[in-house]
Image (cartoon, rainbow, N blue to C red; front, side, top):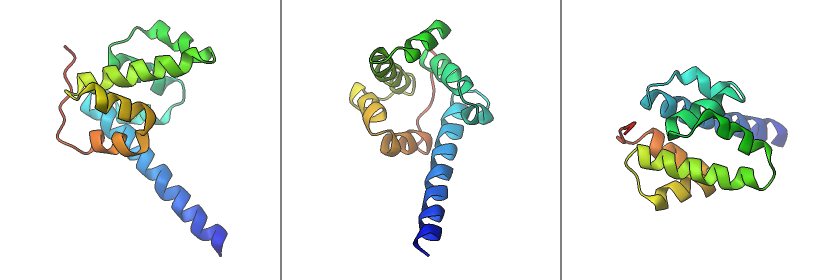
Length: 111
């Protein structure tokens, strides 16, 4: 019985992550389904953050990938008019700050 409940909770969490990514992508004018495609979703996130596509390579280097992820989340927060503190929240507590960004009235600005 515990396995079924754990599975249901796991699916609910997965659904929240998918909905969060989908909504953030759509707010930025990107296709929501791109959040579901591994590797491509990172490339789209780099575009949302205003970072060059070659930064994808940085995510393949241990250690450097963590720094690159923080910089990308800081840039995403900035593009949505949020503070650097919010960007750090996205980087370190994405399961909380991601839905806050996705389901708030934050507007994306490419400039």
